[in-house]
Image 1 (tube, rainbow, N blue to C red):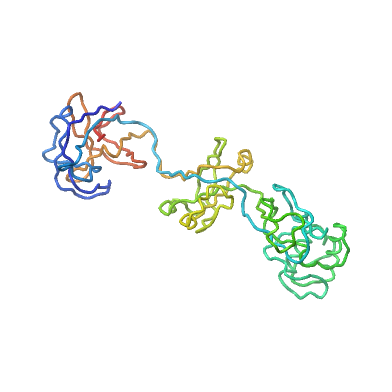
Image 2 (cartoon, rainbow, N blue to C red; image 1 turned 30 degrees about the horizontal axis):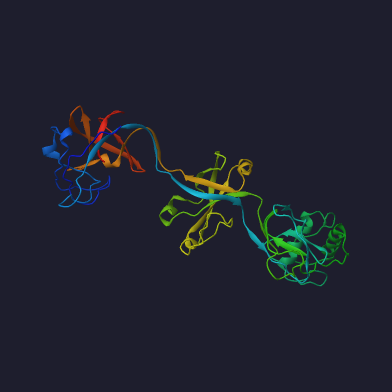
Length: 382
Protein backbone atom coordinates (compact mmCIF):
# COMPACT_ATOMS: atom_id res chain seq x y z
CA UNK A 1 0.00 0.00 0.00
CA UNK A 2 1.31 3.48 -0.82
CA UNK A 3 2.61 5.68 2.02
CA UNK A 4 1.60 9.31 1.77
CA UNK A 5 2.28 12.61 3.50
CA UNK A 6 0.65 15.99 3.26
CA UNK A 7 3.87 17.95 3.67
CA UNK A 8 3.97 20.56 0.87
CA UNK A 9 6.81 20.50 -1.63
CA UNK A 10 7.98 22.91 -4.26
CA UNK A 11 7.22 21.70 -7.79
CA UNK A 12 9.50 22.98 -10.56
CA UNK A 13 8.00 24.60 -13.60
CA UNK A 14 8.38 23.50 -17.18
CA UNK A 15 6.84 21.04 -19.63
CA UNK A 16 7.11 17.32 -19.14
CA UNK A 17 10.12 15.84 -20.96
CA UNK A 18 9.94 12.53 -22.76
CA UNK A 19 12.46 9.74 -22.33
CA UNK A 20 14.20 11.14 -25.41
CA UNK A 21 14.18 14.71 -24.08
CA UNK A 22 17.29 16.82 -23.97
CA UNK A 23 19.15 18.67 -21.21
CA UNK A 24 17.11 20.42 -18.54
CA UNK A 25 17.94 23.37 -16.29
CA UNK A 26 18.92 22.56 -12.71
CA UNK A 27 15.87 22.54 -10.48
CA UNK A 28 15.22 22.04 -6.80
CA UNK A 29 12.92 19.36 -5.41
CA UNK A 30 11.96 19.39 -1.76
CA UNK A 31 11.10 15.87 -0.63
CA UNK A 32 8.53 15.45 2.19
CA UNK A 33 10.07 15.54 5.65
CA UNK A 34 9.17 11.95 6.40
CA UNK A 35 11.31 10.90 3.43
CA UNK A 36 14.01 13.57 3.67
CA UNK A 37 17.58 12.32 3.46
CA UNK A 38 20.92 13.02 1.87
CA UNK A 39 20.69 12.15 -1.84
CA UNK A 40 24.01 10.97 -3.14
CA UNK A 41 25.20 13.13 -5.98
CA UNK A 42 22.22 15.49 -5.86
CA UNK A 43 24.40 18.56 -5.69
CA UNK A 44 26.08 17.49 -8.92
CA UNK A 45 23.21 15.97 -10.88
CA UNK A 46 20.13 18.00 -10.01
CA UNK A 47 16.73 16.45 -10.72
CA UNK A 48 13.31 17.41 -12.04
CA UNK A 49 10.11 15.46 -12.15
CA UNK A 50 8.84 14.99 -15.74
CA UNK A 51 5.25 14.92 -14.55
CA UNK A 52 5.35 18.28 -12.75
CA UNK A 53 4.22 20.70 -15.45
CA UNK A 54 3.19 23.78 -13.48
CA UNK A 55 4.86 25.59 -10.64
CA UNK A 56 3.17 25.41 -7.26
CA UNK A 57 2.94 29.12 -6.53
CA UNK A 58 0.77 31.20 -4.23
CA UNK A 59 -2.79 29.98 -4.18
CA UNK A 60 -1.82 26.61 -5.77
CA UNK A 61 -2.33 23.42 -3.81
CA UNK A 62 0.92 21.87 -2.55
CA UNK A 63 2.27 18.70 -4.12
CA UNK A 64 1.76 15.63 -1.92
CA UNK A 65 3.86 12.52 -2.20
CA UNK A 66 3.46 8.83 -1.59
CA UNK A 67 5.25 5.64 -2.52
CA UNK A 68 4.64 2.60 -4.69
CA UNK A 69 6.55 -0.62 -5.02
CA UNK A 70 8.49 -1.63 -8.11
CA UNK A 71 6.51 -4.35 -9.88
CA UNK A 72 7.77 -7.24 -11.98
CA UNK A 73 5.58 -8.30 -14.86
CA UNK A 74 4.63 -7.82 -18.49
CA UNK A 75 4.13 -4.57 -20.37
CA UNK A 76 2.65 -4.06 -23.84
CA UNK A 77 2.18 -1.05 -26.08
CA UNK A 78 -0.79 -2.64 -27.84
CA UNK A 79 -4.15 -0.85 -27.98
CA UNK A 80 -7.69 -2.15 -27.47
CA UNK A 81 -10.76 -0.86 -29.33
CA UNK A 82 -14.39 -1.91 -29.03
CA UNK A 83 -15.96 -3.14 -32.26
CA UNK A 84 -18.63 -5.42 -33.67
CA UNK A 85 -18.78 -8.90 -35.15
CA UNK A 86 -21.07 -9.16 -38.15
CA UNK A 87 -21.52 -10.59 -41.61
CA UNK A 88 -19.34 -9.39 -44.44
CA UNK A 89 -20.09 -7.20 -47.47
CA UNK A 90 -23.65 -5.91 -46.88
CA UNK A 91 -25.15 -5.28 -50.34
CA UNK A 92 -28.60 -3.94 -51.28
CA UNK A 93 -30.45 -5.94 -53.93
CA UNK A 94 -32.05 -3.65 -56.49
CA UNK A 95 -34.66 -5.31 -58.71
CA UNK A 96 -34.63 -4.78 -62.47
CA UNK A 97 -37.77 -4.94 -64.62
CA UNK A 98 -41.39 -4.64 -63.51
CA UNK A 99 -43.72 -6.76 -61.46
CA UNK A 100 -44.93 -7.51 -57.97
CA UNK A 101 -43.02 -9.25 -55.20
CA UNK A 102 -44.77 -12.58 -54.60
CA UNK A 103 -42.27 -14.46 -52.40
CA UNK A 104 -39.40 -13.50 -50.11
CA UNK A 105 -36.80 -15.56 -48.23
CA UNK A 106 -36.45 -15.62 -44.47
CA UNK A 107 -33.91 -13.37 -42.80
CA UNK A 108 -30.80 -15.46 -42.24
CA UNK A 109 -31.41 -17.72 -45.21
CA UNK A 110 -28.31 -18.57 -47.25
CA UNK A 111 -28.70 -18.59 -51.03
CA UNK A 112 -26.11 -20.05 -53.40
CA UNK A 113 -25.68 -19.23 -57.11
CA UNK A 114 -28.45 -20.94 -59.05
CA UNK A 115 -30.85 -20.68 -56.11
CA UNK A 116 -34.04 -18.59 -55.90
CA UNK A 117 -33.40 -15.24 -54.23
CA UNK A 118 -37.02 -14.03 -54.34
CA UNK A 119 -40.07 -14.26 -56.60
CA UNK A 120 -41.74 -11.69 -58.84
CA UNK A 121 -45.12 -12.23 -60.55
CA UNK A 122 -44.89 -15.88 -59.52
CA UNK A 123 -41.55 -16.43 -61.28
CA UNK A 124 -38.27 -17.19 -59.54
CA UNK A 125 -35.55 -14.54 -59.61
CA UNK A 126 -32.31 -16.50 -59.54
CA UNK A 127 -28.99 -15.58 -57.95
CA UNK A 128 -25.91 -15.76 -60.15
CA UNK A 129 -22.38 -14.63 -59.41
CA UNK A 130 -20.94 -11.55 -61.08
CA UNK A 131 -19.84 -8.00 -60.53
CA UNK A 132 -21.82 -6.55 -63.48
CA UNK A 133 -25.62 -6.28 -63.14
CA UNK A 134 -27.68 -7.46 -66.11
CA UNK A 135 -29.06 -4.50 -68.03
CA UNK A 136 -30.67 -6.14 -71.09
CA UNK A 137 -32.26 -9.37 -72.33
CA UNK A 138 -29.65 -11.93 -73.37
CA UNK A 139 -30.77 -14.26 -76.14
CA UNK A 140 -30.15 -15.08 -79.82
CA UNK A 141 -29.04 -11.95 -81.63
CA UNK A 142 -27.65 -10.27 -78.50
CA UNK A 143 -24.52 -8.27 -79.20
CA UNK A 144 -21.18 -9.26 -77.78
CA UNK A 145 -20.36 -8.00 -74.31
CA UNK A 146 -18.91 -8.80 -70.89
CA UNK A 147 -22.43 -9.45 -69.58
CA UNK A 148 -22.68 -12.37 -72.04
CA UNK A 149 -19.38 -13.72 -70.82
CA UNK A 150 -20.55 -13.42 -67.20
CA UNK A 151 -23.75 -15.35 -67.96
CA UNK A 152 -21.85 -18.11 -69.82
CA UNK A 153 -19.48 -18.55 -66.89
CA UNK A 154 -22.42 -19.06 -64.53
CA UNK A 155 -24.11 -21.54 -66.86
CA UNK A 156 -20.87 -23.51 -67.07
CA UNK A 157 -20.28 -23.42 -63.30
CA UNK A 158 -23.84 -24.67 -62.67
CA UNK A 159 -23.36 -27.57 -65.08
CA UNK A 160 -25.76 -26.49 -67.83
CA UNK A 161 -23.01 -26.23 -70.46
CA UNK A 162 -21.64 -29.75 -69.97
CA UNK A 163 -20.74 -31.39 -73.26
CA UNK A 164 -21.39 -28.25 -75.31
CA UNK A 165 -17.78 -27.12 -75.61
CA UNK A 166 -18.96 -23.66 -74.61
CA UNK A 167 -16.19 -21.04 -74.77
CA UNK A 168 -16.41 -18.53 -71.92
CA UNK A 169 -16.16 -15.45 -74.13
CA UNK A 170 -18.32 -12.43 -74.97
CA UNK A 171 -20.17 -14.03 -77.92
CA UNK A 172 -23.75 -15.32 -77.66
CA UNK A 173 -23.64 -18.63 -79.55
CA UNK A 174 -25.96 -21.54 -80.26
CA UNK A 175 -24.31 -23.37 -77.36
CA UNK A 176 -25.21 -20.43 -75.10
CA UNK A 177 -28.86 -20.73 -76.14
CA UNK A 178 -28.90 -24.47 -75.44
CA UNK A 179 -27.36 -23.98 -72.00
CA UNK A 180 -30.00 -21.36 -71.17
CA UNK A 181 -32.80 -23.73 -72.20
CA UNK A 182 -31.35 -26.44 -69.94
CA UNK A 183 -31.30 -23.97 -67.08
CA UNK A 184 -34.89 -22.86 -67.78
CA UNK A 185 -36.05 -26.48 -67.86
CA UNK A 186 -34.58 -27.05 -64.39
CA UNK A 187 -36.61 -24.08 -63.15
CA UNK A 188 -39.82 -25.38 -64.68
CA UNK A 189 -40.35 -22.30 -66.86
CA UNK A 190 -40.81 -21.90 -70.61
CA UNK A 191 -37.63 -22.78 -72.50
CA UNK A 192 -37.09 -19.67 -74.61
CA UNK A 193 -33.29 -19.62 -74.75
CA UNK A 194 -33.39 -15.98 -73.61
CA UNK A 195 -32.59 -14.62 -70.15
CA UNK A 196 -34.98 -11.71 -69.64
CA UNK A 197 -34.11 -8.62 -67.68
CA UNK A 198 -35.16 -9.07 -64.05
CA UNK A 199 -35.03 -12.87 -64.01
CA UNK A 200 -31.46 -12.97 -62.66
CA UNK A 201 -29.63 -10.99 -59.95
CA UNK A 202 -25.85 -10.81 -60.30
CA UNK A 203 -23.92 -10.38 -57.03
CA UNK A 204 -20.17 -10.73 -56.41
CA UNK A 205 -20.36 -13.02 -53.35
CA UNK A 206 -19.93 -16.78 -53.71
CA UNK A 207 -23.04 -17.23 -51.55
CA UNK A 208 -25.21 -14.67 -49.80
CA UNK A 209 -27.02 -14.47 -46.49
CA UNK A 210 -30.28 -12.51 -46.30
CA UNK A 211 -29.59 -9.80 -43.75
CA UNK A 212 -32.66 -7.59 -43.97
CA UNK A 213 -35.81 -7.38 -46.08
CA UNK A 214 -36.56 -4.03 -47.71
CA UNK A 215 -40.09 -4.66 -49.03
CA UNK A 216 -43.21 -6.60 -48.13
CA UNK A 217 -45.10 -9.11 -50.20
CA UNK A 218 -47.21 -7.33 -52.78
CA UNK A 219 -44.83 -4.38 -53.13
CA UNK A 220 -44.16 -3.25 -56.69
CA UNK A 221 -40.62 -3.75 -57.94
CA UNK A 222 -38.56 -0.60 -58.06
CA UNK A 223 -40.16 0.98 -54.97
CA UNK A 224 -37.12 0.13 -52.83
CA UNK A 225 -34.29 -2.33 -52.64
CA UNK A 226 -35.85 -5.75 -52.26
CA UNK A 227 -33.44 -6.80 -49.51
CA UNK A 228 -29.95 -6.42 -48.15
CA UNK A 229 -27.72 -9.44 -48.38
CA UNK A 230 -24.23 -10.11 -47.07
CA UNK A 231 -21.51 -12.66 -47.43
CA UNK A 232 -21.75 -15.73 -45.23
CA UNK A 233 -18.45 -15.06 -43.42
CA UNK A 234 -18.18 -13.11 -40.16
CA UNK A 235 -15.76 -10.20 -39.85
CA UNK A 236 -14.84 -7.81 -37.07
CA UNK A 237 -15.12 -4.08 -37.66
CA UNK A 238 -13.79 -1.19 -35.60
CA UNK A 239 -13.81 2.58 -36.05
CA UNK A 240 -10.57 3.87 -34.50
CA UNK A 241 -9.79 7.51 -33.78
CA UNK A 242 -7.46 9.25 -36.20
CA UNK A 243 -4.54 9.02 -33.78
CA UNK A 244 -4.98 5.23 -33.63
CA UNK A 245 -5.06 4.57 -37.37
CA UNK A 246 -1.30 4.20 -37.72
CA UNK A 247 -1.50 1.06 -35.58
CA UNK A 248 -3.61 -0.72 -38.21
CA UNK A 249 -1.28 -1.93 -40.96
CA UNK A 250 -2.53 -3.64 -44.15
CA UNK A 251 -2.63 -7.37 -43.43
CA UNK A 252 -1.52 -6.55 -39.87
CA UNK A 253 -2.22 -9.17 -37.23
CA UNK A 254 -4.75 -8.46 -34.46
CA UNK A 255 -6.53 -10.39 -31.73
CA UNK A 256 -10.32 -10.35 -31.41
CA UNK A 257 -11.96 -11.13 -28.06
CA UNK A 258 -15.45 -12.51 -28.69
CA UNK A 259 -18.52 -12.07 -26.53
CA UNK A 260 -18.19 -15.60 -25.12
CA UNK A 261 -14.72 -14.75 -23.77
CA UNK A 262 -12.75 -16.68 -26.37
CA UNK A 263 -10.24 -15.04 -28.70
CA UNK A 264 -9.53 -15.48 -32.39
CA UNK A 265 -6.72 -14.06 -34.46
CA UNK A 266 -7.34 -12.01 -37.57
CA UNK A 267 -5.75 -9.68 -40.08
CA UNK A 268 -6.60 -6.17 -41.25
CA UNK A 269 -8.30 -6.50 -44.63
CA UNK A 270 -9.46 -2.99 -45.47
CA UNK A 271 -9.64 0.59 -44.21
CA UNK A 272 -12.47 2.72 -45.59
CA UNK A 273 -12.69 6.41 -44.72
CA UNK A 274 -16.13 7.47 -43.57
CA UNK A 275 -17.37 3.90 -43.94
CA UNK A 276 -20.04 2.18 -41.90
CA UNK A 277 -19.90 -1.19 -40.20
CA UNK A 278 -23.15 -2.08 -41.93
CA UNK A 279 -24.36 -3.83 -38.78
CA UNK A 280 -26.17 -0.93 -37.15
CA UNK A 281 -24.42 -1.61 -33.84
CA UNK A 282 -22.42 1.00 -32.02
CA UNK A 283 -23.07 3.83 -34.48
CA UNK A 284 -24.03 7.04 -32.78
CA UNK A 285 -25.29 8.70 -35.93
CA UNK A 286 -23.32 11.85 -35.13
CA UNK A 287 -21.80 13.83 -37.97
CA UNK A 288 -18.25 13.50 -36.63
CA UNK A 289 -18.57 9.74 -36.31
CA UNK A 290 -19.51 9.49 -39.99
CA UNK A 291 -15.98 10.61 -40.92
CA UNK A 292 -14.21 7.90 -38.97
CA UNK A 293 -12.40 5.14 -40.80
CA UNK A 294 -13.95 1.69 -40.70
CA UNK A 295 -11.38 -1.08 -40.35
CA UNK A 296 -12.51 -4.54 -41.46
CA UNK A 297 -10.73 -7.56 -40.02
CA UNK A 298 -10.86 -11.03 -41.56
CA UNK A 299 -10.93 -13.82 -38.99
CA UNK A 300 -8.76 -16.93 -39.00
CA UNK A 301 -11.49 -19.17 -37.55
CA UNK A 302 -15.05 -18.84 -38.80
CA UNK A 303 -16.14 -21.83 -36.70
CA UNK A 304 -15.08 -20.14 -33.49
CA UNK A 305 -16.66 -16.83 -34.52
CA UNK A 306 -20.00 -18.46 -35.35
CA UNK A 307 -20.23 -19.86 -31.82
CA UNK A 308 -20.34 -16.29 -30.53
CA UNK A 309 -22.46 -14.93 -33.39
CA UNK A 310 -22.94 -11.25 -34.28
CA UNK A 311 -22.12 -9.27 -31.15
CA UNK A 312 -19.73 -6.77 -29.60
CA UNK A 313 -16.03 -7.60 -29.60
CA UNK A 314 -12.76 -6.11 -28.39
CA UNK A 315 -9.96 -5.83 -30.93
CA UNK A 316 -6.38 -5.73 -29.68
CA UNK A 317 -3.61 -4.46 -31.93
CA UNK A 318 -0.50 -6.20 -30.68
CA UNK A 319 2.42 -3.82 -30.21
CA UNK A 320 5.83 -4.15 -28.58
CA UNK A 321 5.83 -6.17 -25.39
CA UNK A 322 8.21 -7.27 -22.66
CA UNK A 323 7.93 -9.88 -19.94
CA UNK A 324 9.67 -10.24 -16.56
CA UNK A 325 10.26 -6.49 -16.62
CA UNK A 326 10.68 -4.12 -13.69
CA UNK A 327 7.86 -1.59 -13.95
CA UNK A 328 7.24 1.79 -12.28
CA UNK A 329 4.70 4.54 -12.96
CA UNK A 330 6.06 7.22 -15.27
CA UNK A 331 5.36 9.71 -12.47
CA UNK A 332 8.20 8.15 -10.49
CA UNK A 333 10.75 9.22 -13.10
CA UNK A 334 13.12 12.14 -12.47
CA UNK A 335 14.90 13.85 -15.37
CA UNK A 336 18.56 14.24 -14.44
CA UNK A 337 20.81 17.14 -15.35
CA UNK A 338 23.31 15.75 -17.77
CA UNK A 339 20.75 13.39 -19.31
CA UNK A 340 18.99 10.23 -18.30
CA UNK A 341 16.43 9.41 -15.65
CA UNK A 342 16.33 8.29 -12.07
CA UNK A 343 13.90 7.41 -9.30
CA UNK A 344 13.94 8.17 -5.57
CA UNK A 345 14.12 4.94 -3.63
CA UNK A 346 12.82 4.80 -0.05
CA UNK A 347 15.22 3.05 2.31
CA UNK A 348 13.74 3.09 5.80
CA UNK A 349 13.28 6.76 6.72
CA UNK A 350 15.65 8.07 4.05
CA UNK A 351 15.64 8.26 0.28
CA UNK A 352 18.36 7.88 -2.27
CA UNK A 353 18.51 8.67 -5.95
CA UNK A 354 18.99 5.72 -8.28
CA UNK A 355 19.72 6.25 -11.97
CA UNK A 356 17.75 3.93 -14.25
CA UNK A 357 17.66 2.96 -17.90
CA UNK A 358 14.28 3.19 -19.65
CA UNK A 359 12.78 0.48 -21.81
CA UNK A 360 9.22 0.19 -23.10
CA UNK A 361 6.72 2.86 -22.01
CA UNK A 362 2.99 2.13 -22.29
CA UNK A 363 -0.20 2.99 -20.41
CA UNK A 364 1.62 5.41 -18.06
CA UNK A 365 4.00 2.63 -16.99
CA UNK A 366 7.73 2.45 -17.70
CA UNK A 367 10.12 -0.47 -17.92
CA UNK A 368 13.27 0.33 -15.93
CA UNK A 369 16.53 -1.41 -15.16
CA UNK A 370 19.61 -0.67 -13.08
CA UNK A 371 19.85 -0.83 -9.28
CA UNK A 372 16.23 -1.73 -8.54
CA UNK A 373 14.55 -4.88 -7.27
CA UNK A 374 10.91 -6.01 -7.24
CA UNK A 375 9.22 -4.68 -4.09
CA UNK A 376 11.50 -1.64 -3.76
CA UNK A 377 9.52 1.46 -2.80
CA UNK A 378 9.84 4.56 -4.98
CA UNK A 379 8.47 8.08 -4.53
CA UNK A 380 5.52 9.32 -6.62
CA UNK A 381 3.10 12.24 -6.33
CA UNK A 382 -0.28 11.41 -4.88
